[in-house]
Length: 298
Figure 1 (tube, helix red, strand yellow):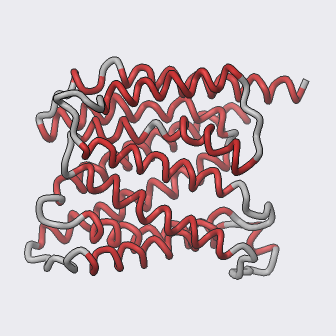
Figure 2 (cartoon, rainbow, N blue to C red):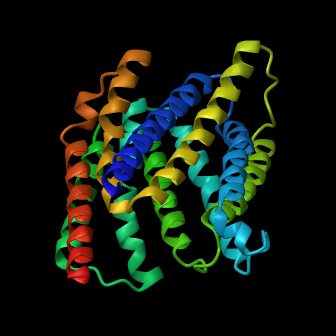
């Protein structure tokens, strides 16, 4: 039964990755007509829906009296502020560089998560994990290529987004254990929605949606992103995160194929072998985490 739940969780995660990439494709498609900030605002409006759905489905939340007030609301709000700028950076990068390159660089978030866990959580990181971080960082540098003729400052945007996403994940572990995860996500997404609205107004306001097709694309963007968050939440509740983490890198080849099919992008020289180093780094970190957990259970 446990194996069946793990397989189902893996299937849900793979579907979520596909939906996230579909959302990214729509963002890239809409980027010539809409600002990154307003797309982020639209995304978070729809992002509130899955957070509310998952919260309502939480038995623990109902058992605790459906409490919506969080003691660490400032921490939850800070995560929302960081999410605002992380989304803005990633969405902006999708309109400036190839889809696969932007997506691949964001997968370096595991590297940043290890680095942030030391000062924020007080974790002790051994030589093996630091070596994995350095391997992944070398892969990122290979893709970004600072100082090279092909370097573009826009490639730093998804790198900043990856750092922000990692910081959000690490900060989530500071939240009290009795606070439901969807409630924290609801706070953070709500703040990010407001942040996106403010950024959009500060950078030129909202662009009128004059085409019905654009309206449907915006709705689909929010639906895909919101559904992906819901599926991921379901997957992580069905099995241990270490069982799912290796499949996270399925998004790198998928992003390459989708960028090739829909935008005729073939960034071979940009991505390889840097993407392989990022994948190798993540797999080493995952292997190390699973080894530690197995030793603790023995």
